[in-house]
Image 1 (spheres, rainbow, N blue to C red):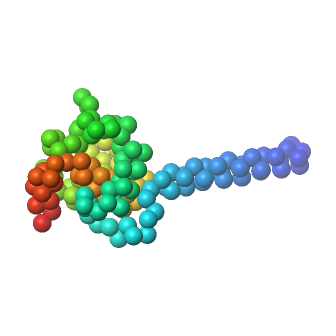
Image 2 (cartoon, helix red, strand yellow; image 1 turned 135 degrees about the vertical axis):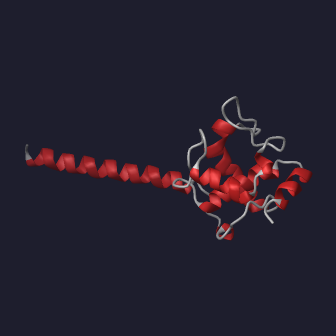
Image 3 (cartoon, rainbow, N blue to C red; image 1 turned 180 degrees about the horizontal axis):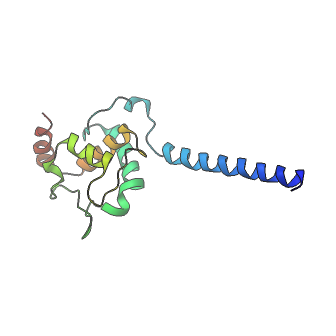
Length: 140
């Protein structure tokens, strides 16, 4: 193999590595990066910044399976206020998203804790107030 071919191969490997790191970084950057949201450890549906960030996370990571209106389908659970989701505490919901459950994959390696909390806040924000209050009592 000539030195020219070796140089081309090295450049190609470096470019593939850069592209790979860029794609991985871009996926991570899709998460909310708002400084005011750092240190979040609950799914507060009343926090408008958290809910807004959660809308973005949900549309990127959750909507394809759970639907625009949280309706799910035959094999994917619904997440709306009339589903079984409000019968779980925030900690339980967080653990499901982070670690996966049943057919749902784990998102703990691809989403930050803040992004998980944000997605849950967005989902909860769509529930009727009485359902939100009943679910919030599970967190106490």
